[in-house]
Image 1 (cartoon, rainbow, N blue to C red):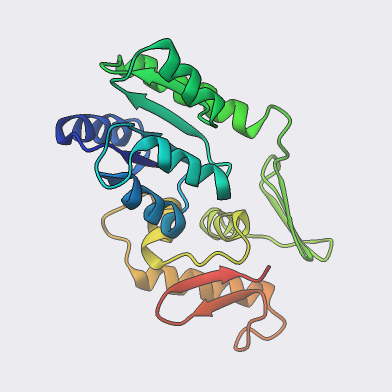
Image 2 (image 1 turned 135 degrees about the vertical axis):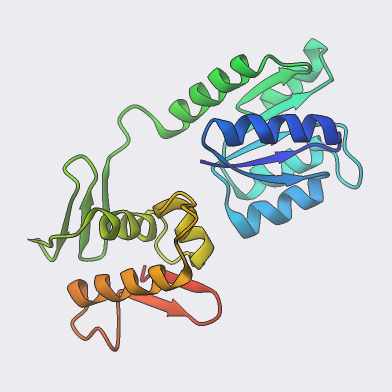
Length: 223
């Protein structure tokens, strides 16, 4: 997952970042609520971990602004430990409320629980975008009802693009997800696999209508 952590305490921020990275997550960091909102808009994290007492914009205001435009899961992690604070956080849209210092094992379990609740036990593993259907249970992709054979890398790349139709993914975004930051992977590899996908999916690969290039930014799947 991509996790955004907002905390003005550098030691807490560093500790959380190390823990989340070691448990397999990509981490974005902010030191105030305004920075967090900017990253939320630009990077679209899967989860937000939010402190309350921060400069510029505190966690309460940031939570209210997040909930005005997004249903992204939010875990409040703060030193404010009164029942009133906990109730305020939960009633105003936080999915969980934890107080510092927190056991990292407990935090990991709470993250798992929040994300399971957010996704829901019956969430479909089938993605449909226009005439495209991707069944993640079967690792099968269909275009206009016809099964298209894809290599594992082609499949993961298409799955990433199909997960957010219309969203632009940079070369770096794609490498982080599809190749999990393997050191020898370059933008040239991304370009090559985009070419291979277009050869299999597009009516005219030289004039793609499904996998679009956003010049200077990356690629997106037509929504």
